[in-house]
Each structure stands twice: as C-alpha cells, then as structure tokens.
Amino acid sequence: MTGCVPHSPPDVDETTSRPTRPDDATIPRAALTPMMRQYRELKRRYPDYLLLFRLGDFYEMFFDDAHRGARLLQIALTSRQKGDGGVPMAGIPHHAAHAAAPPRATGSPHEPAMPPDQKLLFKEASPPYTSAGFGTVVGQLHETFVVAASDEEVFFIDQHVAHERVLFERLKAELGSGPLPSQKLLLPEALELGPASHALLAEWLPTLSTLGFSLEEFGRGTFLLRAVPSLLKGQEPRRLIEGLLEEVGPARHSDAPPPERALAFVAGRAAVKANQPLDRSEMARLLQDLSAAETPYFCPHGRPVVSRLSLREIKRELRRTW
Ligand SMILES: [Zn+2]
Image (cartoon, rainbow, N blue to C red; front, side, top):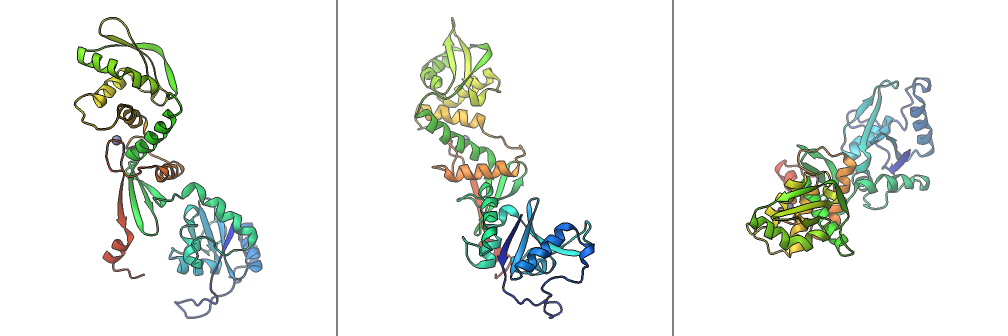
C-alpha cells in the first residue's frame, strides 16, 4: 500500500548545500529488491510527492524522499539493511499518519493532498487509532497507564478506572431496556451471612436481580446464589457478594442512587485491572470509548481517570521554540 504527501521542491541537502537528486539513481536497479524498484517506479509517476509505503506498522519513505521526509517531519533517518544495502529510509507509525504527517506536511489538518487513487489509504489507516478527546495511543506504561498524545497534550490514563467508567455508562444504558445478562452458576453457592449482612442483602435483592444476580432466601440466615451478571462470571461467587455488601453497606457514604452504587461495583469488578498488558488496538478502543463517555474524567466512585501534561509547558521547559 502506498500514500503520498506533497513536499516543496527543490530541496537542498543542508550538510553539503548541494541540491538533492530527484531519485537516488546511483544505486543500480539490479541491486534493489522488487519493493524498492516499485517505489522508484511510482516515484517516477509522482515526482513531486513524498511517497510513503506501508510496511507493517509504519509508513516508510526511501531514497531522497527519506531525506526530505526526515527533515520535514522531524523524524530519524535510518537505513534499509535487508537486501537493499544502504538505501536511506524514514518512517512514521501508520496510526500517527493522520495526526502527524499530513497536517505538518501540508498545513491542512483534514485533507492531505495526494493523488486521488491514494486517498483511501489514509482514511483506512486512521479510524482504529484515533479518538476525539485523548489523542492517539503512544503506548502502555507499567502495564497500568495508557499513554496518549494529541498535538497539545500528553495523557496518562489509568486503564482500570477508565474502563470502569466506560463499563458503568454502558451498563447503565443497557439497564434502561431491561435486566443485564445473567450467567447461571453450575453449582449454586450457599451464603451463610450474619444478621446485618443478611438484612442488607435482602434490602438490595430487587436491585441486584436487575443487574443479573439471582439470589433466593434459603432457610435461616442463608441465601442461595444461583446466577451472577455475565460480566462477572469468572469470579469467585462468595467473595463477589462480600465485596458487593461492603460497597453498598452503611460504611460507604455515597449520594448515588442504589442501582448506580451496585452498578459501580459491577463495573469495577469487570473492568480491566492494573498490571495487565493491553495491545495497541485494545488501548485505542478504550480511549475511543472513554472519549464517548458522558463523564470521562472520573470513575463512578469519583477517582480521576486522566492526568495530562501540556506540550507547550514541556517545550517551554526544554526551550524548544518550534
Ligand atoms: Zn471506581
């Protein structure tokens, strides 16, 4: 796959002050891999464009385009080793192509100028990795924080509380159209509870049944747990109910209405934990969902979701004036 962004010719090699060649013709055609030959071929058709080839997760430029692109986009110039000797190359991660390359190269944030047959490329590369509110995924830190960046800010997002917020809002919306999906336990769990816990559970029974718990009174001081919300099906049933009672019990002060308090518990238990590796598409999805949330900045318990740094501040500190 290929894509193009225009540059402003002619370019001058700053180290030698000589004009750069339109194509690196000094490397014999026979010495190049088929892909490099194809690159040259396309370059002849579009001499005025920077040509980007999709290679794995990167868009790469080669030959003189690599020199121009590296200067234009402030990226590192590298060298292609396998089979192509010293062909210079420079690349940008494909998920950053929309955010970084076209706007910086063309001055237009939305419509990079490129041959019509190449337009599709940038459109299809972008959606899985962009999100309105929290920029583009950079990576994961300590398997706990999603690091993302926009043109103005760097975001550190706590993956657990972010997911908790997303699940909470999704479940709340689902509850509007009926009880949440429920998963039957293979063996019902008998829960012998003290009087206070028993009374508390009895009081919460109607709410819990809408969330997918199935509980019935079973003799003195005992409840039989027959089903749990599908989202929590892997969890140890007794500890689940103990945690739930702790969350909705009198020790926790909360102004939230009862269904929301129980829902916050379900969301918290179902959410991705800290110290859990996420792949890039999972992180991008989380950011997208979080951006779409009504209240993206706090979890249902009030914990903050995101810490942000201003790139302007970083640049000021590093005395970078451009
Ligand atoms: Zn929370």
